[in-house]
Image 1 (cartoon, each protein chain N blue to C red):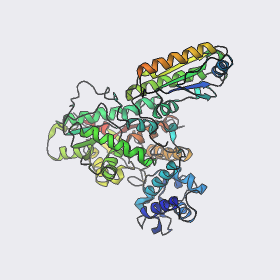
Image 2 (cartoon, each protein chain N blue to C red):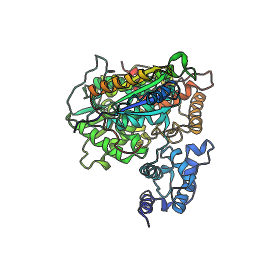
Image 3 (cartoon, each protein chain N blue to C red):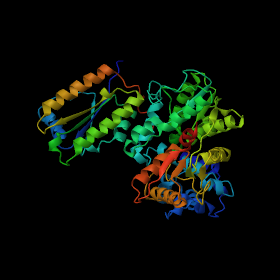
Image 4 (cartoon, one colour):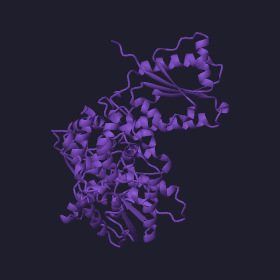
Length: 384
Length: 140
C-alpha cells in the first residue's frame, strides 16, 4: 500500500465513512441535492472507498459540498461527512493542485497574507470616537473579516462593519471596554474548511500570539464562524490554547438575566424572519438565545419560515469555495420563503449569510425588496 | 546576503507586449528583478490576481496596459484602473504601501519608455524594501 493510499484510508477511518449504512438520509438533508443537482454524499463515500479520490464524480463533489453539516446532523451512524470532504480537499491541495474557489481565491489569499509575522494592518479605522476601547485588557472583541468585506464587496453596497460598531456599542452599554486589535489576524475558518491545513496552522499560531500579547483571556465575537473556530478548531491545532470564546448573544442574555437595566429596550413595530447559520447551529443553545433575545423586544413580531432552525441554515456557499447555479438556487429559495411570510426584515446571524443573500437580492427579479440585517444591529436599534 | 527584491509585471498582449519584444530587438536589458506575465488584457488582472501576487511574495506589481483610446477590447485600461483602486483599499487595510502597485500605459513602439519605467519601478521598490508578507509559504 502506497503512502497516499494509507493517508486516504486514515481519512476514511477518521471521518467514520466505513460506518455508512447507505440509508440516504444525507442526500435527503443536503441543501444542494434539494436544488436538483446530482449530488449524493453516500455515493461519493462509496466511490472513495472503491476507487480512491481520483474519480471525476468525487473530484467535482468535494468542491461542490458546502460543508454546512446538515448531513452530519442527520446521519444515524455518526459519519462526519463535512470533515471527510475537508480532508479530501487537503489531499487535493497537498498534491499541488489549485482548489476551486469563488472570488478568484482572494479571501483565502488575504488569510494567508495575514499569517505573515511582519504584517502591520490598520483595520480599526471604522470605530466611532464615542466608542470606548482599550489597548490591553482581559476581554477582546474579535471583529473578524468585516472591514475587509465592506471593501471587497463594495459593489453590493454592504455595511457589514456596522455589526462590529453595534457590537461595540452593546459592549460599552454593558460596561465592558473591550480590546480591539489594530493588527487582528483572521480566525482562519475558511482556510481550514478549504483544506489548507498548513496555512491554517500558521495563521492560528500567529493569531493566538497576537491575542495573548495583549493580556486577553476571553474573546467575544459576533460571528458564528469565529466562535466555532475558537471553540472547536483552535484547541485541536494549538496545544496551549487557553482562551474562552463567547458569543455576544450569550453576553447580552447574561446581562438581561442579571436584572441590570443598562440594556432597556424600546418597541420596534416590525415583522421579522430568521435565517439560521450553519456554524451557529452547532450551538443550539446560542441559536435559542438569538430567538429569546429578539422575543424581548416589545412589539417585534417574529414569523419563522416553515423550515426554520434546521432547514434554513444554508446560505448557499461557504468558506469561499464554489458559488454557482445551485448556490443561487438555495439563496433564491431563502429569499422567496422570507417574502412569503410577509416580513419586512430578514435577520441573519452570520455576515456571510448577509453578503450572499444581499448579492442575490440585488439581482433577484422581484419587485419586492427585503431588508437584510444582522441580529446584533437590530438589537442595537432597539436599545434606548 | 543582500535581499533581491521581486517585481511582477503583468503585460497586456498588445502594446506593452510589443514594447517588451521590442526591448529584445533593440537589445535593451531587462532588470533581473522583474518577472513578466503576459495577459490578454490589462483589465483581466483583477483584485484576486493582484492579491495573489502579493501573497506569493511579490514586493511590487506593475500592470502595463494599452493607452485608454487604444484598447483592443474597448475598456481594458479603465477596468484595470478600477481594479487597482479597489486593491489599494485592501492593501491599505493590510498595511501595505500603495506604491507597491502601479499602472502604466504604452503605445506599441515605446520600448524605451517600458525599459525606463521598469528600471524606475524596480528602484522604487528597492527603496521600499522587502514586503512584510512571507511569500511562497505553501500551496494555493
